[in-house]
Amino acid sequence: MVVPDLNQPAFEEMTLTSQLQVIESCARSANPETDFTIVGSSMGGLLATIFAQARPSVKALILLAPGFELLERWKQWLGEAGMEKWQRDGVIPIYHYSFEREMPLNYGFLEDARKYDSDNLRVNIPTLVFHGTKDTVVPLASSLRFCRRNPEVAQLVELKDDHQLLRSAPAIWSTTQAFLQKHELL
Image (cartoon, rainbow, N blue to C red):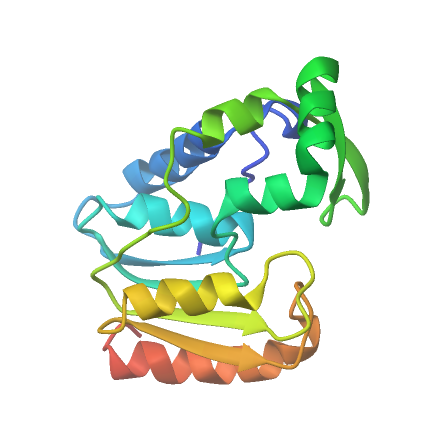
């Protein structure tokens, strides 16, 4: 298992492109004949989905509260005035769950995100999506729409939990094991 640091080159300067480059680097460093499953949470779930669309070596996705519909969520969260302020100031303070504090994020993140479609993603591999019904960061509706667009391969598991899904870890683990066994990926 590889758990890359996607805050590259640093959180303030990261973009979807820089994060996808980290994932690409991890994939290249693996044995080229190795198939793999990607597990991604929140932004990592969005990145995993974007990455997997063009990589035949990715055989399955496990997504935890994936950050779909990214630009729309930012617009709703910040509003027009907040978006203009972010552009004018060049940075915005964002709470970083891993570091447990607010950190600045460059406006280049948003400009780069416009290069990617995070609203209409399609996949052709088995995809297991976990999402909390009490998630206030990424609405459950985003995962519902994703699964409706990908009914042949995507399975949604709704959990009575928030965005971090910490209380649901045992259920996530057991469901993931069954999913991987069903698709002969264990």
